[in-house]
Length: 261
Ligand code: URA
Image (cartoon, rainbow, N blue to C red; front, side, top):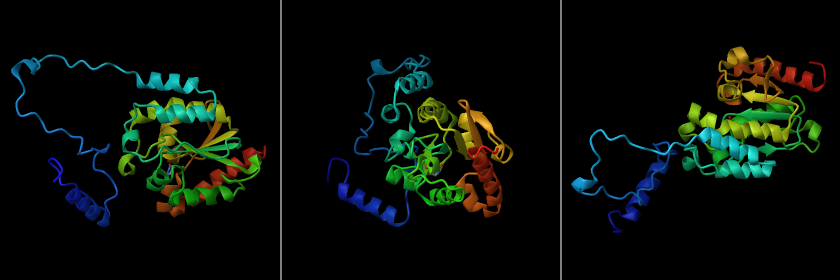
């Protein structure tokens, strides 16, 4: 026995759950049960708050803090360090890895997705799971790749949140708002010619609009850069009949790169 816990029994119970297929903590953030202190049996009367005393918590304007941290970053490396160190986003506590970007920052096209899934969280890179494989195929069809040697044919890939949301839930509006200054600075520093927004959370964060079925296929603008909303590859994996729309959107992007659109 180790204090109140039998460590080996707990590890065995955890291994059993993993064998059954459990992959996620139930809460948004993990709880270290070894750190949880038992409730004190009885609180001294003097320490009890008055029944209607207001709870005073220091106000932190997380968006303003994010804006200041992002603005101070003079390079992509500095931005990645500032975003990774940002302490106010709860997603950070439940993620294994910070996922900043992949591909070539000097690419003409910057793809912005939603947030890391399990595979991206494990590898610390965006779009490396099943939907990432489809994304690579989609862009290869118009001659673009994240590992292209020539900047002309390259892609730069990031997400609107850099930490995996638990159980792959959509990022909350507060999480998107806190991360938006970092994404906007990311765009400013990478300075792409065109942006592709993958799915509703990316459009919600950067266009302030959702409704990808209506938004896709027409040019919008993010930080002064033309932006094309498209169906997210994970949606296309579930609804392959929608791939023809994605193909049309990719051709629109290609035409614009060739100066035709
Ligand atoms: N889906 C996303 O939106 N981004 C990733 O990085 C992976 C899956």
